[in-house]
Length: 274
Image (tube, rainbow, N blue to C red; front, side):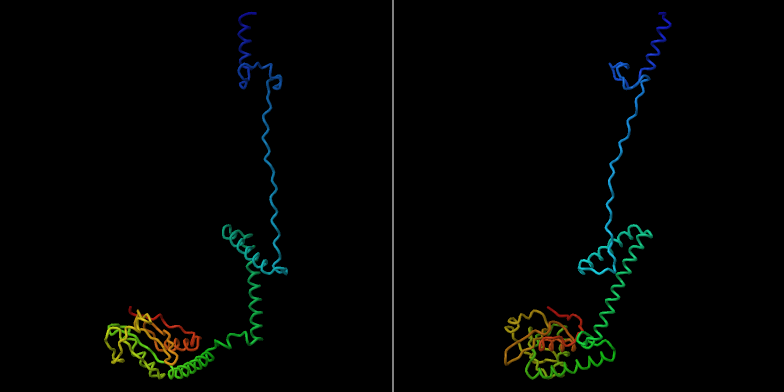
């Protein structure tokens, strides 16, 4: 063999040797690659197929429920989920779903309110307006009657009860409350026993007592302080600590005597000096 042919043969061997051949392995030992050293590419693995869960069918809003509590809770959950979906993704489909559920819930509430009203109209003992009227003229008549009963009860109580008034002459709230208490006592006939804690007097009560032991026994730490007492039974009840107005004072005493509020109106929180 000539040197020219030997060189050509060596070149062909280098060119046709595959790049993926492992060191020390001859090409003719890899029969699976075929005559032309062709190797089939690896096929990609198919992903596992998982079936999507089928969402449960929503029950019809108009369908009767065997358990009304469970049905109401289910409706609340569906409304909450539909609202959340519409807020996070305000698509037409999500908005339509929420609006349909909301409309159904509103219709149920309307039917409930209508039925409630018809039952109240036909059952007087369930109509709170007969006890607490809402019409302007009826409210005025109601308040006038309450005031008449309040005044009558307090005038009757003044014959059995007295008032203990604790104050300090240096207290500005005591000076403000003293004329209110004086007019209140004169209106209903209550006797007021004024008790000074610092030895001073007030214009409305120029000759007060000084009784630190009684103040200590009743734990009077805030003035002005007012108590109502019944001498024959020796019962005593706190009425007010701090400044209160005439109407609230009457309401409080009535409530103590009767155990029920005399008027639904609430006055401002009293102010006092400690």
